[in-house]
Structures are given as structure tokens and as C-alpha cells.
Length: 419
Ligand code: NAD
Image (cartoon, rainbow, N blue to C red; front, side, top):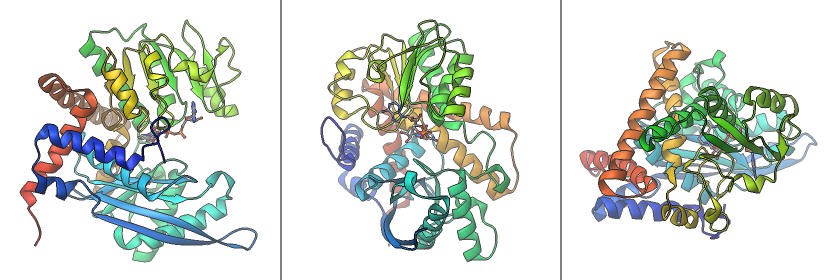
């Protein structure tokens, strides 16, 4: 996938961000060679008998960027624009993200180039099972643990878990996370990303001495990450004044009633038409006068064209890569405080880690236990990134990359080079 404003390949962006952090850390060239590139990349053919009797060949990928600090970990994406380069970039970011929150995982990502919106449940199941059997030699609870990503969900994970378990001959729930609760999923997993976003915003407000109650918030994207973050911000007394999804945008200067908006979205699949709100141009949401902006939709939402108009004091990157590098440079020049994606949205992978731990122990935790542990992890990671930001006087994104890459570098130096 190309970033809109720069037409820069996302994997090139990932490599550029690595180089910048490695330079700031003064990493030696041997260490860079050891941790910069993916350890393993698998491209597979996925033949599927479609409902009309045709055989269709899909292409799938699984990239393991790093297993230096633990098993590789990362989602599986079904999307027409999935490419090997996109999967490599996302796998690389997973490595640094897991290291930022200091969980014992490396990074991975998978994907199948397909259009899931135009496939039946049966076609999706057959594709998932065949893709699973194709990547089966390199996944497993101690090796590489997939999870949901764009257009994959708990049902997809259930099919992967079943295919893997049937092949091995016994149930192995720890092979995937983001599973249904009845198959060994964790309480709190579905809302973990939005909850983690909320915790990092709370930390940022504290740092900036900003009051969260009464603060004006705009949220782009009202799916899993965006709607949970909006709900928790609303409960904490913030005014969520604007919300958009792919079908429209609603605005109320006094604050939207978020529980009712979630109810409408669940019923109709859209936020448009919400009573007690005005319709707004979705593009305007990003440049709205507000205190906190939460981009929770797609990559490259804020680019060099709209970045100069962004007024928010805090940008909380719930989405992966919502700011292009050019937008980053513009916003670094003003007073905007960016909570970078590999910190802000790391709540999802953190609770995936909790799920894996529970599966491995066959012992399950209460929801409040999950929330408390997640809050501690997110607060610690925020504090660690902030310290580098303040001590080294570098932007928060560079500080987060320095923390993650520095931890992986330390681990690889201790392990040394095999043989
Ligand atoms: P989702 O599919 O549940 O929701 C996406 C939302 O974005 C939908 O409401 C959709 O209508 C909206 N959207 C799409 N295009 C839009 C546009 N142009 N303008 C406004 N809204 C638009 O997805 P999600 O799981 O909430 O993921 C959102 C982002 O968060 C992605 O970048 C994803 O990679 C990232 N993320 C999610 C998780 C997670 O656990 N869900 C974890 C880490 C990162």
C-alpha cells in the first residue's frame, strides 16, 4: 500500500524510521544487520473452490520479522490491497510495538490478497483453512501466534485454531489470540485497543496538565478501536464533539451521546442520521478546533495537505500509521503532542499476550484483572517513552522507536550470532 501524499512505499517508511532510531541510538552496523530485516517470509498459493464451482487462486503471506525476544506475534489481514511489502512493514512495526510495552514477543504479520466483502462465509472458511495449512509449518504457540486484523475476526481465529488442532491431533488454543471466549479467548480482548488508547490519553493529559473532563475530542473511525476509546473518554467526562465513519460524520459542540451513537451504529452500521447532531464533512473532522484528535480508521489520514490545519493539542494514533512522514514533520514543528501508534494502540497486543498466558496456563482471569494489568503496562510504556522524549529532546514517535529498537538490540547482543 502506498502512502497518499508521498507515494512512498510503507515498507520504505518502516526502514526509514528504523534508520532514524538506530542513528539516534548509535547502533553498530552488526546489530542493525541482525534486527532490521524480516527473519522469515513465506508466500503461499491458496486455491479455493468458490461457491459457483470455479477454482480461484489467492496469494497469501506470513512474515516473521523477529523472534529475538520471544515468539513472533501479529495479525492476519484480508484485503484486496494486501502486498508482501505491506505485510513486511506491519510485521516490522509489531516487533517494535511488543518491545515498547515490554511483552515477550517478536513481530509478525500475515495477509491474503482477497476481497472478503464479496465472499460468502463458506468461501472465507475454506480460504482460511487452506491458508492455515499452508503456513502451518511456521506457526504455533511457541513460534508464531496470529491474531485478527483488518477484515478478520474471532470466527477467523476459531477456524485457524481448529485447522491447526486437527492437524496436530489435540486442541491447541494458544496458536491464535483474539479467539471467541468459549475457545479460550480472554475477557477484555475485544475492547483492549480502545482501552489502551484511553489510558495513554489519560497519561498525556496528566503530562500536559490538561483537564480530561470537558476536553473536546474528535474521533475518526467508529469501529472497534474508535468506538471503545470514545465511550471511555465520554465516561471520563470528555466532550466527544465529532465522530466519523466511512459513511459520514456527526457533530455536536456540547458533546455527542456516545452510548446512543454506539447503539445506532450497531443497529444501522453507520453514524450518519444521529439525532441531536449536525452532519459534517468527514474531512473537516481532522482540522476541527478540538483538544484531542483520535484517528482510528486508516493509514495516511493526515498528510502534508491537511496537517497544517490540525488544531488538536493531542493526537492519539489509535490507527496504525495515520500520519504520513510529511505530516509528522509538519506537526513536530508546532505544539502538537503525538502519542505514536506503536505506543497508543498497543493495548490490543498486550491483552493478546494475556490471552496466550491464560491459554498456556489453562487458568482464566476476571475482566477487572485484565483491565488493571493492561493499565499498568500502558502507563509504564508511556512513562518509558516520555522519558526518552524529554531526556533526548526527540519527538514522541522517535522516542517510541528508540525504546522498542533499543530493547530488541539489547536482546540480540546478549543472544549473539548462531552458529
Ligand atoms: P474496524 O474495521 O472495526 O473500524 C474501522 C472504522 O473506520 C469503521 O468505523 C469504518 O467505517 C471507519 N472508516 C473507514 N474509512 C474511513 C474514513 N475514510 N473516514 C472515517 N472513517 C472511516 O477497525 P479497527 O479494528 O477499529 O481498526 C482501526 C485502526 O486501528 C486500523 O488502523 C487498525 O490497524 C488499528 N488497530 C486496531 C487494533 C484492534 O485491536 N482492533 C489494534 C491495533 C491497531
